Amino acid sequence: MSATDDRTSSWTFLTHHARVLVEIAKDPDIRLRDIAAGIGITERAVQNIVRDLLEGGYLTRDKVGRRNRYSLNLDQHFRYPTEADLPIRLLIDMFTQHDELPRRQQIDGAQPRSSMTP
Image 1 (cartoon, rainbow, N blue to C red):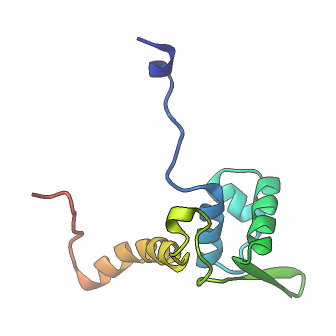
Image 2: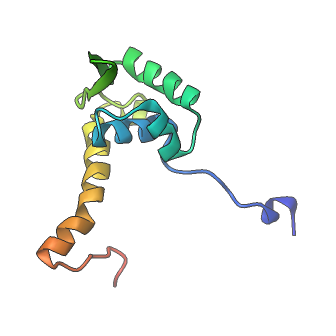
Image 3: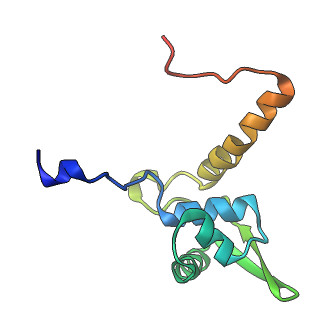
């Protein structure tokens, strides 16, 4: 058994930037400290990510009293060359609709579908 077998892998498919975008899409009035707590990173890291997203044109920020309200530019495209022709709307829709599925299934009485069944 090697040393790598003894530790669990901690990688995920989504970057912290994507997770911050999804959290803001769910709640445009969310506080940065709540994003940090929700995705398990520091508030300073969230501040830096929000700055990146603002500078990249993915977000805009408006002051509402003492709070910030964020808006997403859903037509902005992914940065990586192989996905550069796709808008971030696809990612945001996938994850915001994902949260609505269990509630919708309870209301409709629908059974969850699995793409893994033969």
